[in-house]
Amino acid sequence: MAEKVVIVTGAARGIGKATAIELLKAGFFTALCSRNRQTTASLETEISSFAGNFMISSVDISVEEEVREFISSVAEKKGRIDVLINNAGVVHTGPVEKTDTEQWDEMMAVNAKGTFLMVKHALPLMPRGGHIVNIGSNASKKGFPGWAAYCASKFAVLGFTNSLREEVRDRGIKVSAVLPGPTKTDIWDSLAGEWDRAKMMSPEITAKTVLSVINQPLEANIDEIDIVPSTGSL
Image 1 (cartoon, rainbow, N blue to C red):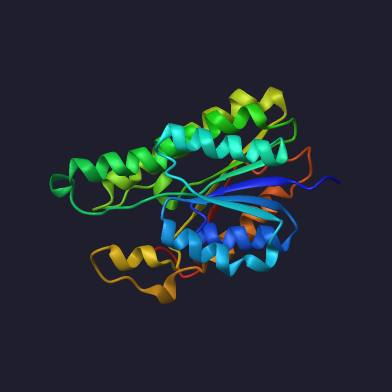
Image 2 (spheres, one colour):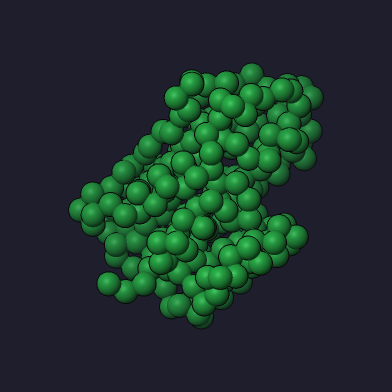
C-alpha cells in the first residue's frame, strides 16, 4: 500500500503534537503546521529521528494566503493529500459581557474559518478514499457558562463537518468529527479558575482515537465520536 500523506494543524502542542507523533510512529508521511514559530521549531527538533517522513511549517491557518502556500508546498513534495486533520484551535473564556470582540474574532478566525480554509484548499488534492478529520470538543454540542464564544466557534466546526460530509460523500471522501472532553494540555494554564488535571484525559487518548478513525476500512466511516473522561465532566 502506498504511503499515506497526512496533514495535521496545530501540531506543536497538546492533541496535535500527540497525534503527529502517533502518525509518525505508524509510518505515515506527516505535513505539520502550527502558527507559533518557537513551539514549531521545538517540535521539529523533538521528531528529528523521523527525518524524511515529515515536513513542518509555521502557518496561521486563519490567513488564506498562508494556507494556500502551505498546501502548495505539500502538493509539490507529495502530489496529494490523503488525510487532513484539523486540530488547531484557540480558546478564551469569560462572561459574554466581558469578552473582547478581538477574542471572539480570533476564535472564529482560527477555530471555524481556519478549518474551512484548510478544507477548501486541501480538497482539490484529495483522492477518492481521502479522509477529513475535524477535532471539535464536547463544547461542540453543549454550552458551558463562561465559554459562550468558544462554544459558538466549536458548534460552527461541527455544523460545517456534518454538511461537508454529505457534500463530498459521492466523491468517496470521508469526513469525521472527533469531540474530546477535558484534556491535559497547557491551554488550561492560560484560563482563569482552577482545573482538576487529575480528572482530565491525556492527549494521547485522542491521538490514538484519531488513528483508529482514519484506519477504518474503506467501506466504513466513524461520522462522529465523543471521548470523555471516565470521571465525568469537570
